[in-house]
Image (tube, rainbow, N blue to C red; front, side, top):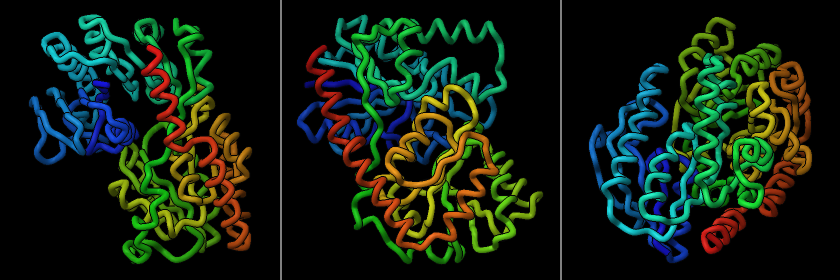
Length: 401
C-alpha cells in the first residue's frame, strides 16, 4: 500500500509518528511523510534545515519537508509556525501529483496541521485516517492565556471540519470519544489506538549504566522526562519539591526542554532548591534508558484541567515499558492506569501535598517493593499498549477504508 503520512513533526524531532512510519515500512508499505523542517522543541531549526523545501530519506521513508517558520519563543512566532505549515503543506497538496492509496494524519498540536491532508484527500479522492493526539479547543484553553469566546468558536469550527472530513478517526485516549462525537465525528468511525513506547525502552543494549552516573546526584531519584511546559504544571512540582527539601536524599531530576525551562531555573534558585532539584537539559530519546536506569520513581504530571483528565501522557507508556514505578500528579485517565496496573503512586492534578507524601513514603520502601511495582507496569504495558497491538488496529482501519 502506498501511504502518505501528514504530520507537522517528524524525525529528527522525537514523536511516535517516527515509529509508526518505520513500522509501516517494515511491514512492506511504501511510506512518504509530508512534514516541516525540524525545530521542536527549542524553536530554532536543526543544523542543515531552514525555510526551504527539502526531500530526503530516512530508513527507506521518503520525507518531503515544506518551508515553515520556526516556533521561536513567543506566542506570535508559534502562531506563524502553525500557519506556515498549513499554507506550505496545502500548496504542496495542490500541486503534488503522486497518487497514494491512503492518507494518515496526526493532530499533535496544532490541529490545523491536518488541513494539508484534507486538501490532498479532496483533490485525489482518497481516504483519510486521522489519529487524534490532542483535543481543540480544550487544550488551547488549558495551556494558554487565550480565553476568548470568539477564538473558541473558530477553533471549534476547525475541529468540526477536520472530523467531518476524516473517514476513520483513531483516538490515542479512549476518553476523547464524546468530545469528538459532539464535534461531528461519527461514532461508527471511531476506534481506540493508544500510544506505545519506543522499542529502545525494552532493549537492554541502550542501557549504559555509567554513562551519565557522574551527572546524577546520589540519593532517592524522582525523574521527569519530557516537555517543560505549561501543561505539565511545574508550579505544583516545585511546591512538592519544597515540601521534600528537608529530606536531603530525595532528588528531583528534570530531563527536557520547553517554554517554562527558564522560569523553572529561576524558581530553583528563588526557592533554594539547588541541592535537591536539577535541570539536566535535553537529550536524544536513545539516551533515556541510560538515565531511567538510575531513577527510583518516574514522574508524570498535568495541570488540573478537564481535557487533561481524559489524557494519558505518552511518557506513562515509556515509563511502564522500561519497568519503572511511577508517581503521578494527574486526574482521570493517567492515574487510573497507574492504579489499575498497580505500578506506582497517584495524586490528583495540582495536589502537590499528596505528591510530596507519595514521594516521601516511596523513599522509605524496600528496593524490592519498588522493583515489583515497576514489573507490574511492564506487564500491563505488554498486555495493553504494545506497539504491535496499535499498528494492527491501524492496518485494520487502512484496509477497511
